[in-house]
Image 1 (cartoon, rainbow, N blue to C red):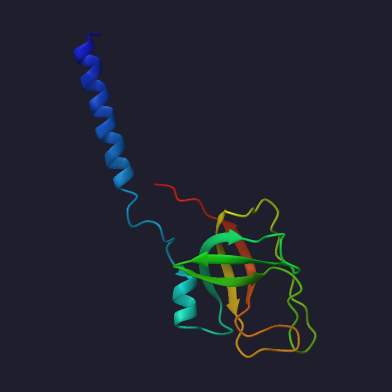
Image 2 (image 1 turned 30 degrees about the horizontal axis):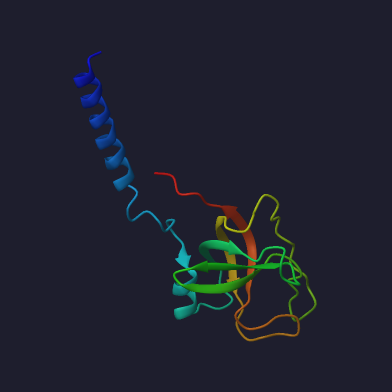
Length: 135
């Protein structure tokens, strides 16, 4: 293959890669989810919702919880020791394989009025799934 043909092939490949990378634009937010900022700016309490964001402080806080950040806001997500006012404990959610800096989708609920065992604004997880944008 001549140098000119190689050069043209390389340019064509770069154009294809640029088009594919550009097709990712606007797909940052997983379908059917809210950013943490959207949830906190218009709170929906004690109702199951899906939020997504970046995990922080997992294993660093003195609780079975971590911080989840997206849209410029942060919420504390509890994955264990979720105890209702009547003393009923919800099952813990497995966070094995989740690390700080990972992007996740968390299904759960934003707690309303504070209780004996929780504070208003805590987010109780029912499911946590790793999310990596794929275009």
